Image (cartoon, rainbow, N blue to C red; front, side):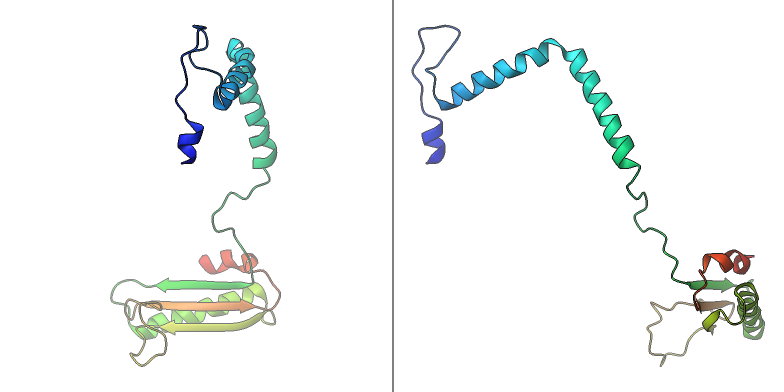
Amino acid sequence: MVSAWLIRRHRESADPEVPFAAGRFDRLRARYEASLAPTLRRRGLTVGTYVVVTALIVGLIGARLGTEIFPRADGGQMQLRIRGPAGTNIEKTETTALRMLETIKQAAGPDNVALTLAFVGVHAPNYPINLVYQWNGGRKRAFCKCSSSGVPASTWWRCARH
């Protein structure tokens, strides 16, 4: 109903420049065309101004925006997966995990490590966490978690990776 009211049939105008009698929409369109005419005459200037203003906005505001979907956060916690060569027995993997935890304690300082947790091999089926979430692919793999007491994990992360 509103569209029928807004878009009525217009009578033909006697003036060839104005094909319909001036209704509300026609007056709005005529004002818009009149305001747009100077811009269309200077297309090069309009496009150049647009490019410069856009570059300024991207340069000034874009530099302050974060660039990562998941920004890095250092809460003093670290999680590692240790993978030995194929055929490694569980005792060797356990020794490797213990050495890794000892290396982390040395890098962070023994008083700065609040908690360490390691799982070696495949977990028992009665373990309370589903194996889909806590996945170790056999006796050659281990999973370690460490938490520090006030020291950022980034300071000892590189030590643990090498």
